[in-house]
Amino acid sequence: MKKVAILGSTGSIGTQTLEVIAANPGDFEVTALSCGSNIEQMARQVRCFHPKLVSVAKKEDAGKLRDMLSSDPDEERLPEIHCGIEGLCAVATEPSAQILVTAVVGMIGIRPTIEAIRAGKDIALANKETLVCAGHIIMPLAKDRGISILPVDSEHSAIFQSLQGNGMNRIKKILLTCSGGPFRGRKRREMEEVGVQDALKHPNWSMGRKITIDSASLVNKGLEVMEAKWLFGVDTDHIQVLIHPQSILHSAVEYEDGAVIGQMGLPDMKLPIQYALYYPRRRSMQENELDLFSAGALTFERPDTKTFLGLPLAYEAMRRGGNVPTILNAANERAVASFLRGEIKFLDIYKLIRAAMEQVDFIADPGLEDVLATEQAAYRVIARMMDK
Image (cartoon, rainbow, N blue to C red; front, top):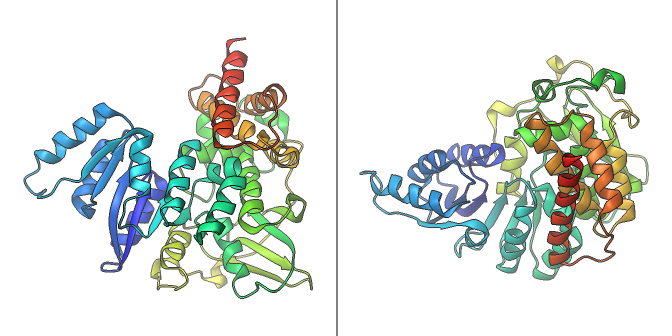
């Protein structure tokens, strides 16, 4: 029985991870969970999975959760309840856990991931910011400790699966697929007045609000390019993004002889989650069977980088290196939050990212504290821009 800890258990990836675990009784034990402020859902998860340790964002919510569980006559044993970044690190390093699913959104996932690696836990990685901002720290540390980084993003899982058994062969390029999001085919002038609800209508995937907006702007795909560089050791110039509206081919690898090996499947995050949890074994997943007869035509397009600036901005950030990927990520995080609150227009997301990339001081070889300081510096630039 594999013992699993989850950062961000009440979010989209976290809840689907628990669904995979519940669908395979006897194969997994949940030892630790964390959430932000959704303590009602956390209480339900505790009652269902009986973890040893849980964490919430705020101290007052830890008290509320303790009261909720203490009054439950069916709850025989209360878990340890922690809060804040120390709580996230406690979940990440829970002694009995063998694998940590990092499903939190944002740079808050970096420090607990580092602590989990130091504690000898394998990582099922769904937190992009961990590698976008700290890949130069994370990957050498994981290699030194003999830790597996198992990608949970559908695209990176597809690449990982396409590399199996091909360790001696040279990669020509990685083909990273993208649905194109809800605004695929639109030109810049057509997007000047799009609203929040328009941007949240992803055609294929069910995801959290922030990542759905990132998908609409193609910033998400840019972050995935950066993540792929660190995961697979491929220069960004050898990572090609393809618009694939059907989301059936999740990504592929082209080898030096021209052969392309990819992974296909329905757009269901439970497949890469299950693959990471069971790796290197595969397990039956009846509801995820792909019927190629009904799939129809599979088409591919070049991304429109003149309209969707998230992709070229990300390539620029990675080529400049240092702390610039962190600047882009932090600026985007605040810009998207402002868009979701109705404070800025959709296209202003790009303007705010560009401003931060131009105004935050460059650091060539940032350590962890530099990464965290860069995040705050980018936030300050966005705040100044918003006040104008």
